[in-house]
Length: 304
Length: 238
Image 1 (spheres, each protein chain N blue to C red):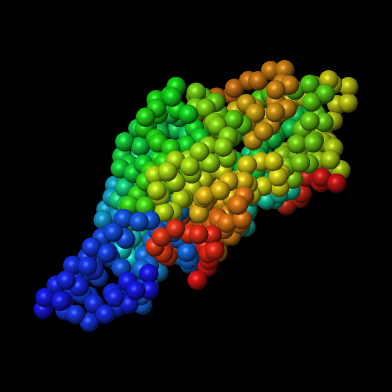
Image 2 (image 1 turned 30 degrees about the vertical axis):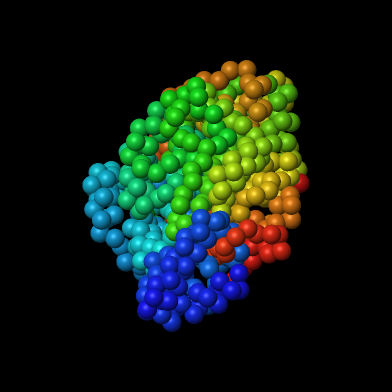
């Protein structure tokens, strides 16, 4: 390895070497490191908050709004080459935009903002199965739901368990898990959707994504951050009782985290869990630096 | 020059081979960015939203009442919890002849926003109660009362009216100790076991009143003009 690095270093003195390096997409080749960078942007529980809160709001004056979120995202896209934009569900319900237009505007906006994928939250069933189907026709990104079986509903074939993205040579496997609907969503809304235990499904998804040689595995979760009832499945439990997940982007509990919580998975490796409140008040951002080769276990995923 | 070409060739081949091998994430960094109106807006998004916003404007901006103080939902209790439950009580106490052994029960999770001090618009009530829930009256056997008391203690409190929870026991405003049943006014969502209110399985009869909960709130804001606020706490779990 050292010889090759040295060799590359020498070559850079020659004309054309730098151009070759740039074209190959190395960010820090001159330092001798073959690192790549990925920026993950995320939201959760935006709840139809298209407009900012009023300027005289007692708690969040002037905060949020899709146009200002678009501006932030556009600026980051100008600075970063590899960006993935994700949402952890509960896109619907919370303002008259949903009551009057059934979620169509939310989908059009997410498409315009360039979302890459989302999972479904419990409130995304509020318009019923037909309501979601109608609104979803305006989206151009995938809905990832690994633990809802929609076979006996009109949503069959319209969602998928996971999607693999390729950003600048990095393969990112993203899968989605949702909360138990019974007792939370009226049966008339979710009809014959079958909920499956998310932890077992998550492990299956990880194995499939590892087989597909994904470099990073991300879970979009609408399970909720953590609960007093230790038996209730949450992002905490999901992180600790599985292996292979690098990042869980959560929702449902409207939890404001200023930075991701770092937990140990069942093999003692670090898992990041993040959630950024609700109503589009915040945009979450996590940057990953990738190194070439296989992680032999000596290096944990560490904060810079 | 020839040497250079060979070097370059080897570099390209070498880089090509390594580009096929995998990567692993070694380091991370994070930032939670506040979305604020000090940031610029994006005209393409504004034009996408504009017709939808205009379509809502006239109906949602209509001012229908006044809120005398900032109100927020809370557990075990809050003036906003009281207001919401009272709205149902005021709307139906005469229509349903709600006397003894009657209570209104809602859930904190179902109240979806706060009221700021000042003018209240139709849009504020939509934000507060976005769901199309329907008001339901439920006849319950007295034997189910302990289940409700346990639920309220475990949840840490929910909005109630015409009753109080004292030391974990429900006391109706007007108590009839001889009766073997009582009445709950609630939403269809809760009456059907939403928010794990499984005690409704013991109901003797459920009657759908056909009114949207949101319409009841809209009516009550209009009727009260300045909201009637009760600052007392109705939930004492211990």
